[in-house]
Amino acid sequence: MTEEEKEEVALRRKYELLEDLPGIGPATAQKLKEMGFHTVESLAMATARELDPAGIGEKKAFAIIEAARSSISVSFVRADELLRMRQSVLRLTSGSKALDGMIDGGLETQTITEFYGEYGTGKSQLCHQLCVNVQLPPERGGLNSAALYVDTENTFRTERIVQMSRHFGLNPEEVVKNIIYAEAYTSDHQMFLLDNADEVIKANNIRLIIVDSLTAHFRSEYIGREMLAPRQQKLNKHMHKLIRLARAFNAVAVVTNQVMAKPDVFFGDAVHPIGGHVVGHTSHTRVYLRRAAHGPVRIARLVSSPYLPEGEEIFKVTENGIEDVSEDEKPRSRGR
Image (tube, rainbow, N blue to C red; front, side, top):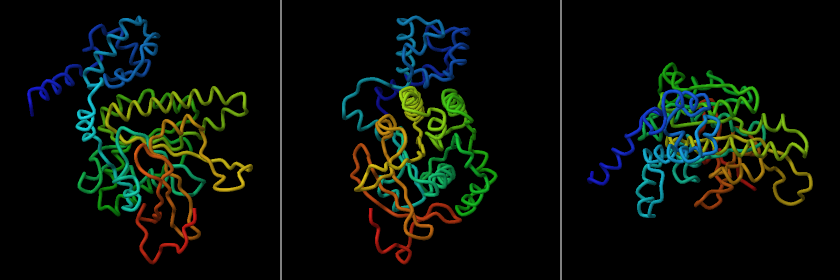
């Protein structure tokens, strides 16, 4: 390690607690925690306006945020430095080699991966599998870490985790201990959980954050065209909080999304994800899941990615979890 790299490491370790940051005393730190800023990492991703309710002036807020950002090296960098920093990006296996290959080796940390599709296409099953996979060692495609699961549709089942864990030869009791679960009862509750997740993430070595499903509550609570703008504003804020957490803690962020049918579409697929451009622009990798003609086979289509071409692969959902499809099981026709 060079002297320059040693200085970088020392700088990142400079501020461990909110109280360590210049300009923050115990009282201000307590106010920030009540607002959902529990760690230096979360404060580094904040805006000056967000600190206003804590009684912090704009100039002081900029100074505090800058100090927090210096600890995690958030600044302008050359592209060659960015290339070196990209080496810190990790990948998590989906359980299917075919699916992993389509998304360049697995789900990326520091980004949001969105899986959308109709009911029964395997979205929640995939989320359960990821909760197990993240606990695997890196040589098996895992991250040796824990998972945070925000459930909005009451679809999480520990029994499924136990089944998948046994297939991998893991101790189910240990696996379930490493999944931090919360059920969100409303869209506001859903946002609150994520707004206050930073301390939990840091304390439990979490490298996987799941919201299943992202849009269920927003869709049911904000009904009618006149409610579209406030719904999109809240979704936008929620998604940006998620990406901040993913970047600050080098975690994989996964959201599932419901779909709707557009009856005015006569050619092509009439199924579209909920959330419009807000969700579309914030999700880095979007994967559309649908059923094959028969059996447990599912078709995954890479709809958008910052650098990967569109593609399509198949996998299956079995008692063991997410698996590859053998040559004998592959459908003859995989029409789009």
